[in-house]
Image 1 (cartoon, helix red, strand yellow):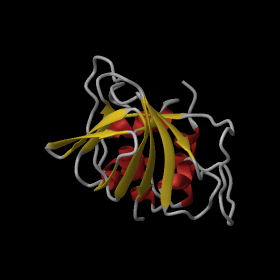
Image 2 (cartoon, rainbow, N blue to C red):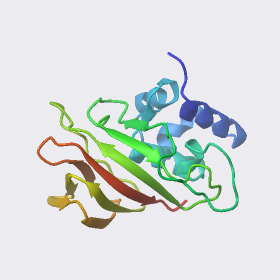
Image 3 (tube, rainbow, N blue to C red):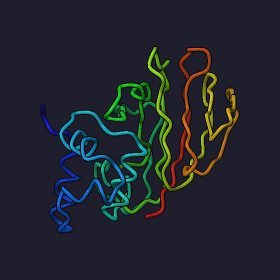
Image 4 (spheres, rainbow, N blue to C red):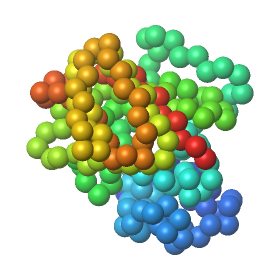
Length: 190
C-alpha cells in the first residue's frame, strides 16, 4: 500500500529530530500497531491520534496537512475547490464519516486549525470517542449534530455553537442520520 503524505512527514520528522520510529508509540501514547498503520496507510489518522503524534514530535498538528509555508494571512475564498481529508482511527473504519476541508493549510506557524467538516451518517459501526490536549470550537452551518462530551450529550442545530476542552472524551456525529456541515476550530498547544 502506498505511504500517505502524513506517513512520509512523520518518518521525515523522526529522522530530522533523531527520534527512532520504535519510540513513537511510547512518546505518543498510541499502540505500535496504530503508529504502523498511520505511517503506512493511505488514510489520514484521526485528529486525536494526529495531535498525539504531533505532540510527541514537538510540531503543530497542521505540519502534517500544510501545503505551503505562507507567513502572511491565509485567505480562503468561497467556491474555491478543495480536496477533503477524511480522518480514520486506523484501528476501525467507524470514524471515517467526517470529511475535513482545511481553511488555513497554507498558513505557516498557526496555533489554530480551522476546518469546514461535512459529517455523514456513521452507518452501523459506533464511532469511537477521542481525547487530546487543546480546545475545540464548533459552529453548526447546516443540519443538526449530536456532541458526546464526557457522559453528556448536546444537540446542536444550524446556528448553534459549542466550545469545549478536548482532553475530555468527545465525539461529533449527525443527528438522526441526516448529513450536517460544521465550522470547527481546533487549538492544540505544542
